[in-house]
Each structure stands twice: as C-alpha cells, then as structure tokens.
Length: 183
View 1 (cartoon, rainbow, N blue to C red):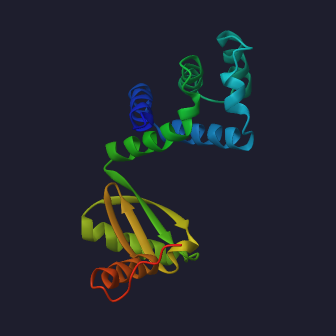
View 2: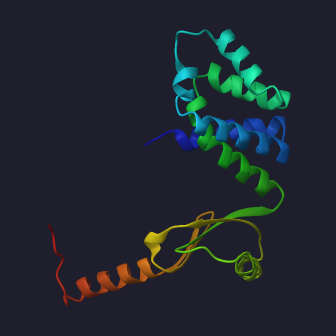
View 3: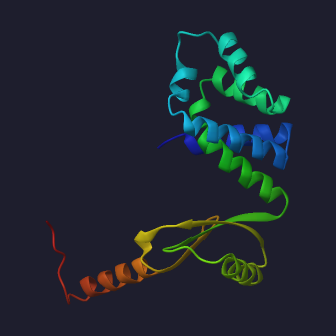
C-alpha cells in the first residue's frame, strides 16, 4: 500500500499548523500550476547534481513573491525529497483548511457542462439535505454518459447512467438472464 496519503496528510497538517490561510492555498496552487507547466521540474529538484543550498536559492528566486512560510515549505519538501508529493499535499491542505471552517469539499461530476445557476441550486439542496456547508468542484466526465456523481468525503451518490447500466448488467448476470462475455 502506498504511503502517499499519510505523507500528504502529515505535510499538509504541518503547513496548516504553521499558517492556515486562503493565501497559502492560492500560492500553493500557483506553484503547482507552474510545476505542471514544466513537467521536468520534479526531476530537476530531485537531481543530485545540485546540492540543497543551490536548489533552495533557485526556489527562492523562482517563487520570490510567495510568503516566507510557503517558500520554506517548498524548500523543506525539496530537502526531504518529498517535492513529488506536492500534488497530493495541496488537496489535503485545502480539505483541512475547509474542515476547520466547517466546510466540506464536494466533487460534482456531470457528463456535460452545466450552468452555474444549476450548480448553485443543486449545492443548496445537498447542503440542506446533509446540513453541511460545501465548497463545490465541478468536473466533466463524458464516461458517466449522463446524470450526476457527487462525492463528499467518503459519501458517494452515484446517479449516473454509467452506474445504472452497470447495476442493470450485474442484476442480469446475477439472475442468469445473460452470461458474462469474455474476450
């Protein structure tokens, strides 16, 4: 089993304990975007050709607009050879930050784009149903065919056509109406 969730949670919690703010989250997201635009950056910071002091100077120059805590955090990840976990640490930091303010992250997946007004009405209904304040991330995934999937923590509501077809298939197989076709 991978240690990634444990490592991400520990580093996110440590950063949260040092500085818990939307500014930190925004800066981490900007750094992640910069890293995503240059895929070789993780290899660069992992190379033994540069010592840690050289890498820290480079990080300080590249991200000089960041707060001191964010800068030190990125340098710590490099020094501890954990920079590759940044993409896992950021969502965990966001989750902790939201949870401390009584907000949970909700992922809503639809097959096609939906209007913002629909998302707001849908979110309001789910908040009332669960008695929770939510921050929504909307994703489009054509593979669900239609309907909607909602994930809030460990709660999953799957009202997608993909799921309904899968359930119908399992039911037909279970009742012996059809047999599994293997290729």
